Length: 85
Image (cartoon, one colour):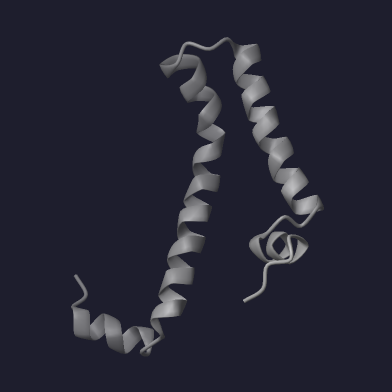
């Protein structure tokens, strides 16, 4: 296992903000990896019909596409509402 000092040298002393951003990206990507298993969980663990599980997965995918199409991120939403920093 890598020691704390070796890890600090390897990372090059990157700022704490970078690591928080990195952690957020990691959580986001893990959520993306889990998504294909949603249908299996819904049909076996929650005893939903295949059609019902397909509808849930389809709505999840449509939401992702809509977010990409309309560029719904924090910066866009905050400027659209008139929030200032």
